[in-house]
Image 1 (tube, rainbow, N blue to C red):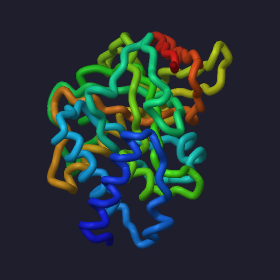
Image 2 (tube, rainbow, N blue to C red; image 1 turned 135 degrees about the vertical axis):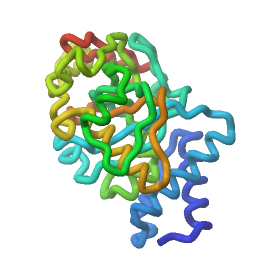
Image 3 (tube, rainbow, N blue to C red; image 1 turned 90 degrees about the vertical axis):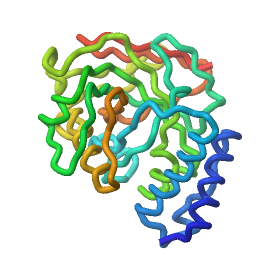
Image 4 (cartoon, helix red, strand yellow; image 1 turned 30 degrees about the vertical axis):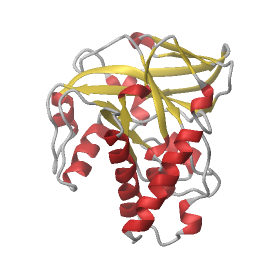
Length: 261
């Protein structure tokens, strides 16, 4: 495992890359001995520094939960990161492209918890009972580590490549819609680029919420009421550039639009 000094140094590098919208060399190329535990420690040091600087944590993102994303990245293990209040946009927003590196968009559902959720044996039914509502969401990926050859260690260290999310306006309780069959038709500048259904995320998009609660229990923590949980993409990531207009149609759960400026 990496030393505390090395973990702090890498967290500082990632914070500087976030500030300058830059990219750093792969952690695993420089420290091949780095473990998944090291990567969450790096993320944790970075997270705590952001909170100390005044940012407010509003939720968690789960990534790499679908075959589409695992095949797109070559990584087969889910991961998670944190989301701050200044990264949340409403549908119709103009998103500053220069705030991100390696900018891509994913199609997801987000869940807002009505009550705390805790492992160690949390099930899908437990997660559904704890969820207040589901809402469509687009995730904007923001990778500060070079993409070629990256591993799960690199991705987790970089806050699971989370940059921002765009939330839709249609909210549904889990008993109001079959969440497995919520569609996503993702378009860029009027042309359909990706399609999928939410069942592509672990068979049911809320399964990831249960997975995360159990993962948190290993660290003596739980998911709290009011937190937003971004459950993972059911399409491959779509590259975007300045000037791109993005629209995603979620069928009965409405649409999301945004423009990169």
